[in-house]
Length: 79
Ligand SMILES: [Zn+2]
Image (cartoon, rainbow, N blue to C red; front, side, top):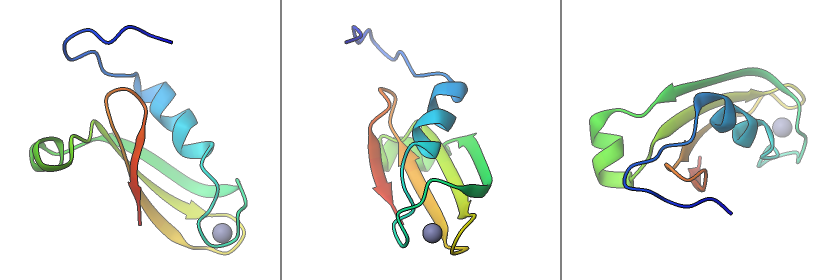
């Protein structure tokens, strides 16, 4: 789809869309009352190859989830 060139990292906007497009692990809804996307810390970047770190609070069940997104927009983990 896109050509991966050295350290091309997806934009924050795109990372936010990916985070929003991932359903709540608990109730399967896509409604978030809070969603923040921040650049990963150097250790997250090094250990997890994470480019963006998202924190979300489900608008339906209130579950708090953290999500790692890599430079190409792949979801690395949700917890
Ligand atoms: Zn939920």
